[in-house]
Length: 618
Ligand code: AGP
Image (cartoon, rainbow, N blue to C red; front, side, top):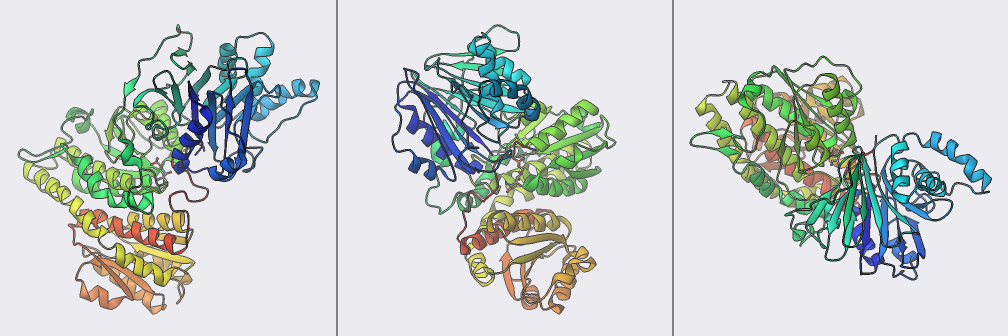
């Protein structure tokens, strides 16, 4: 989704903005631009459709002004084009704005501002919703308002969630940033006689680890050596920056060809880090520290609802299994974007668990808001980003410790979310007396084997590459699973779609004969997730049905399972896992199959087309 950067200080802003935008490329974008202003108020705005390299190629002379803002755009209003790329200027040319989010009432605002434009014989320069913002600000300045008041007024007129950065020709040594609602974050980085701005920490980390996250309603005036924030009607204050401990090296790709591959390999570590200190034996405890829901609260819960989107929804589906089976309490999952527009029957005894690696997904935040406003049910968020909007909205958080995930496709954060859900199931089960000490110990001991299951799954990378070579030209895949492997079948299909652009459907194997089987023939490969477990025989029946339609079968099953290997065309062995732990043994293989398929097709794996890492628009 869109990215914002900004700089004010003693260096030339241009190269810093471009470098910052490069660090945000992983968010996904279709155009980019920068605006730089020098001491004399000379303003340069450069923007281009396409990749950052297209923008760089178009910049024949890098301006040397010391203040600037930049943006990577992910089109919502108006297609990707040079003119729709940010920054956007007021018709007067004085006010320059970049925005993340959506101005929901932009049509209304355009109509209101039209009269002014007509009177001046000017027209809108883009089809975007954003362009009304500089125009509103500029109109208020013309009417005599100080710049800061004009920005506050404009922000107040916008409906929706927005994060903006602003520069003005008349204030060449200052930039402004403002946040309204949860259109992703916006962070100020404190340097030595210089200040940085970004929608995401990775763009700041090479420069500083001293940061201030703008809160909802904040408007910041940012000079090279001073930040002043105004919040509502309160007096202006100078925020105290906090230190972040993210390691810039961790966001480099290292020896891996793609971030996605690196992050797949980091999964055992991400899982170990996530459960460290949270899965204790002798005496057994799950989530004993650093968890804000008391046993009394957990004992009062009658039902758990797990929500999320995309990969996080698939984690939620698996979490539902664990909560039912381990905690012995009714549990459901739901797509957050659908849930938020329903009127389900929740009550204060339902625990709502939101899974969101970014903590900023608008659909999930909307669902959390819906829960709070309508039922006041307790909410827990599982996320990789401490301080994200979801953590602010929730009553309690489990921060997974996966480190920055740069590839747009979620991999290690999926595994981290799974670990958190498993721990949560154990904690609820224990608090409610469903698990005694020994049973809790057994469950946690099993979880402690999960990093090794992941590691052994990752060793199948070569085998996945061989199979991807065979099926690199296939246009369709059906992925089948049953029980706890069904959500993984959906995750496998999502990964294939996301990064390989291949049509894939994840199905419950029992459902196949009720429709999808009609698709099958020699050219329609089927991936079957079939580890030994309670539903193994049902899976092999489904595989037989597929084979009878001559569709090629790739089975992922237990290492050394000769019976299964003999039944299918291609076999990938993963370490045998206890029945509830198969998501950990199978996950690397489904990710690597999709990765290898994308590789055979020569695709942009870390930044798939049309996708964004953090989805902050509806
Ligand atoms: C995962 O590979 C996708 N990029 C996407 O489905 C993602 O899981 C979804 O947008 C939810 O994101 P979140 O976890 O940040 O809420």
